[in-house]
Image (cartoon, protein in one colour):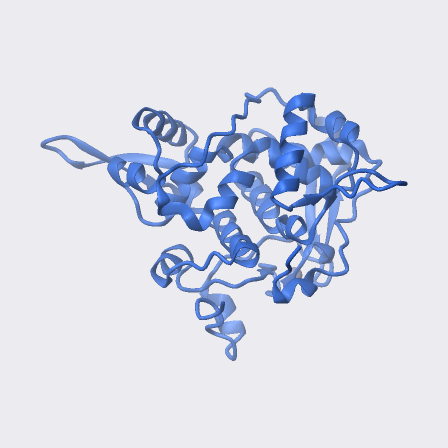
Length: 326
Ligand SMILES: [Zn+2]
């Protein structure tokens, strides 16, 4: 496997401090990520949201950029409006025409998209044109994840999980939202080629659940199966896809057969954390996650920092390491 030059920043490979045996805590964390994944993580919803961040507002623009079929676009956009992520507004009275814009809730998803951009660039060398980066991040894109409270660069090993037992006790741990996930073939619209692998990996809620389990130390097929409730054939398919995409590896040697996160899989942590963060903030009326992320060095609740001006001010010597890199 080829590592990019900065791969060492991820070593030693450790994971969040959650006991693998603590099935309740694991289930709680799964729930937290799952409720976000249920809302946004299918390939087409994710494609439309990313397209909106890139400036598309009109139906034809979404179609062109994502390669989505008209009927599917109508359905998915309607769902995104119902979920509160987009709003449909008239922009012409005669003839009556509508456009779609991100709401505040949709806008808050930017942190997740930025983590995808970061991940794609780190592992697939997907270098976006400057105008796309500017549209997404205000011309600032770092190859690292930062703590919003203190501005420090963090990796998964700097973050610990705190589970609120009282929240756990009060809440049901299984969820009854629709649990369907269909892998769609890659769109032929090439407007999202910089998100090619993100759409494969994060546009599939089962894949996301498997990654969450892997982060908490799950290794074996049957353990993945127990904690996700995914049917054996789908689980087998998704483990195969994640292995092929090199987020997991399966050495399958003597002693300890099982799936392990690669450095690339480990780096997907930023996307999952941002997704959990977004879910907690915007979907908490459905389920408030009992899992809190703590940045150990500053002791504050961990949230992924957005690309805002405050961080620029904090690092005057380092204002533009963004687009020019790679
Ligand atoms: Zn911090």
